[in-house]
Amino acid sequence: MALTTKGRATRQRIIEGAAAYLRSDEPAGVTLDDIRAITGTSKSQIFHYFPGGKEELFLAVARHEADRVLDDQQPHLGALTSWAAWDRWRDSVVARYRAQGRHCPLGTLMGQVGSTPGAHEVVSTLLSQWQAHVRKGIGDMQAAGLVRESLDADRVAAAFIAGIQGGVQVLMSTGGVAHLEAVLDTLVEHLRG
Amino acid sequence: MALTTKGRATRQRIIEGAAAYLRSDEPAGVTLDDIRAITGTSKSQIFHYFPGGKEELFLAVARHEADRVLDDQQPHLGALTSWAAWDRWRDSVVARYRAQGRHCPLGTLMGQVGSTPGAHEVVSTLLSQWQAHVRKGIGDMQAAGLVRESLDADRVAAAFIAGIQGGVQVLMSTGGVAHLEAVLDTLVEHLRG
DNA sequence: ACCACAGTGGACCGACCGGTCCAGAAAACC
DNA sequence: GGTTTTCTGGACCGGTCGGTCCACTGTGGT
Image 1: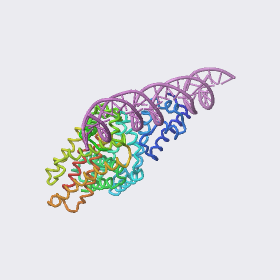
Image 2: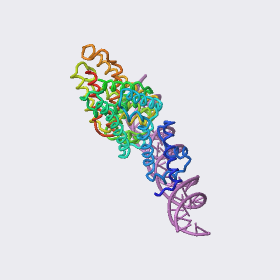
Image 3: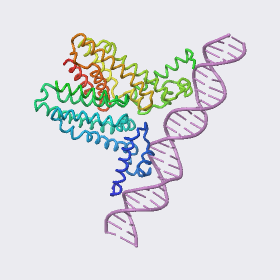
Image 4: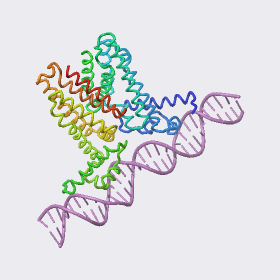
């Protein structure tokens, strides 16, 4: 599929329009017609740019959203080299998900696309990148002598990822960020020893 | 709706059949026809016993599954009064979700029922009961002088709940229990101080 | 200017699925 | 044993939604 300038623009408009729609509303089920209406396109365009249909489109949107997740934590996530930096990171995560509220674009996408290999791949990639950043942060703190060397950086980083995921999930049910804050604070406190 | 003995049996058969179906397969979308086929009933029966249709049925199944979640952790969860007990509990949680694998009956249910008040209520109730058990366990350990008093039992209990949720969610994407183990171990270690 | 191909609109289709309806079988109750 | 209520089967309906098709319009290269 060779895309002209106009074609690339349309394709991008579809992805970003769909992503924006997911972020604003939280429809249990997102249909192609919804996206068609929101992005001001027609059915044939969707299938023109995403021959794989719904799954291919949703996967593209999911990747787009996954990128946002990490971007929204920058620059804090990339430089966890002091306790102050960890606090700022913690605050940015809490703020991001508090703002997002009960809506979880990625969650909705995954719910629709289901358990296809592609969906798992998107999530796994995101989680492993995320965890790598945290692990590096812990390593930096250890190198600076701020965190004890006996601590297994990879294991604690994994705990952070799981904790954040769970905190967000609880947020979606209860509407409160208390659990997210609790798990982040507890784990940071554990780092502090 | 007055139910006879036979009626109660049929109603129960529908719920348990649906629950078993969810546990075995992990269909992205469960239809009433699936349940009808599995449980050997007819459409009219489903609507006879669950006048609210799909949502009422799925909520009933979700409550049934939610009960199982806590039951499967007993008796360990109810008596977290020694480090050995905490370890046994940790193992039972890991074992339970390792066995469950990528399937998450409750998750599927929630995905289908969506964000209705009823769905939130089921999840919130489960989480708060779960958290209460953990909090009591921490309190018991403090009373026994095994955990420092300065630790906020409620906050750490919330962290456990969030961590487990997240660990299970990661399990669904990656298929591995490493994150679940990491977060449980890290938090228990934090308790140990 | 022409032509090949990308881009676009929208009617249409077929499958699926939640839900309705009614008629008949089976209990339960007197 | 008769009648009233519950239980059961399954045909049917109407809406929804992913996906197809085809005709038409732009666009870019030569």
